[in-house]
Length: 478
Image 1 (cartoon, rainbow, N blue to C red):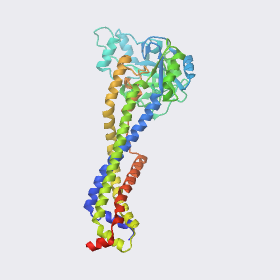
Image 2: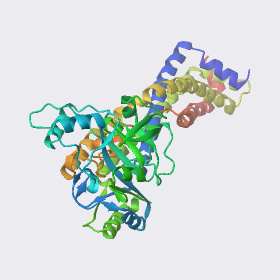
Image 3: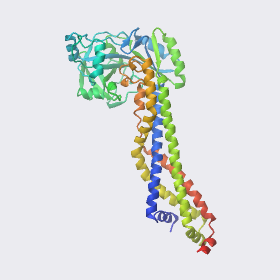
């Protein structure tokens, strides 16, 4: 009988014990694999966070913040100046405007309320109307905010209204935090530096209006076609649409003016120096340069701690699996002393006997790994979410407090109403809560390879004990 066949047979010699060993190994290996999957997911999300938000600077008009404040609008010449600053890899200009449902705006004006509000950077106060209806209901907060700005009609009037829709014209396929737009359907707008009748709609805004890719709607009596849909991850972020920059400037009747500049730096190491150089080049009286990275330090640190914890847990679970194998194989060697003595007496070499026990251990590990992989595929998402939730609650709260102290209305550093959810962490807040731990074949394969490596080490120790067994002593004892 071959060594492999004998090893497999020995592994199932005591079926009850084999089942118990496999079950214990499945738990240890499953926990190890789940922690490895969580570690890889968090590591990837930290890299994405640093790449998409950590190296982005936002330039807004000095004294202006979104649709509030004062100052002079930014221009294309300032965008050119910003692009010439050392270590700046790209500059994307953007123009934001508010869209109001045409019927609601007409009813509101008839009730005695003002037709609209001013826009960013000196945008015209004229209302830009659309056939779209906002996907977010006004509710208590919307009613309170509208009353505070005098847009609900005469005092005491119970005038119904719809919230405005944020439209952003961008010069590249990026959102208001500098992160690439992630489309759920359709395609982008092609050349973002040219006028276009295409638009990208938030998924909930499209659903509210019964629109899909290829559907048509109007803005300021001009027809637009839905080219694609995106999901910003929040109700506020999805109550928005994106246009090409020239199109938005034409609709706002502000050619050449920009609401903000999204500046990407080539490396996180150069962010601080680029911010200083950018502020000096544009002038403190003309532009404000904000660094979202300051509010992200706590968030990134929190995710890094999750990464460390998950790796330590992976190593601990891996060591536990190795210890289980070691103890089981030591027990088996002691049980089979007579069998080992007989094999050695008839000429079996120590190497062959040791290999038999190693292969037997690997059979048990293979069964445990199969069950553990199934456990990890179901548990990894919940474990990652629990780790992230417990470690980021404090970080998000601290960053939110900082945002409320330093940013009016708790808006994102870019000052964009369309920034996802108005989170003080901007796009980072969305990324923090959207870590998805998927048990990919590559990660599971690497984890199982590590488990087999530890199993071989754990099985070698008792296998070497077989060399110390002397056939004459075993047979004499019998």
